[in-house]
Image (cartoon, helix red, strand yellow):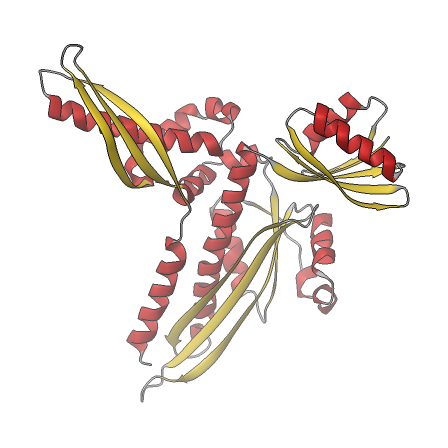
Length: 359
């Protein structure tokens, strides 16, 4: 394969990975005044109004009402002014020119690119603040720091708070641990999310009769919540480069890291958007309760807890029981509901997604 072919394959790989955005189809209505009997111009403005309403609806599913109010001007300036950039396609379902009242109404069905919208909301810091600014650690198994540095740079550019773990992830002991133990260790550094994975690359053959060498690299990533070990997303990417010397290998690694990193960041963002607007899975650890008592706690939380959709007793061992709680809100909100229903409850430890308490 010649240099041009390798470069073309690399560009196609990046474009394919970056193009897979989640989408949401919504119906919205827009209106505009008919001025100087110009119905055509009013129609155009009504369509723009409907498309903005469609984007507003999707924003509303990603961001809570409090953040919408606090960041109203920011969203209006940065998001709503470029409405059409988030619309992949739309269909006009109906249109009504009311010449008596001089109002033109248009109803559309629009497909909004959630991925692009979520990325921009996150870049404004809104989703980050809604999720209480989670801190992220990166630990990749690799020969050098090329892939890690690229992933860290991307996370910082997107507004993530990055935790420095020093040389921990480069030790053989770390990579001899189970995945859950690795997440627990990253939690000690203050990380709520850890990106684990591997990066590798190799040199191929010379391109034609030149001294250029082809290089290939692969990066695999996985993001976990450190307190519950819940998977936020996983991705992989490949990269190719043609160069002389090790610079080509580094170039291929950075390309593979960019592809995998963009995909993973998008998945994390989409998951946070869902959690911010609907429910998230929390872990409740109860100490000093029997299995029968745990079932009673689960039932009362399910029936009386505000914002709680479901509670499942996952594991009961001795005097400690683990419950999965699906609710709107974080572990702090769960703690408030627990104490409200069981006034004698005592909170022992609390993170964003995990609560330990005694009854």
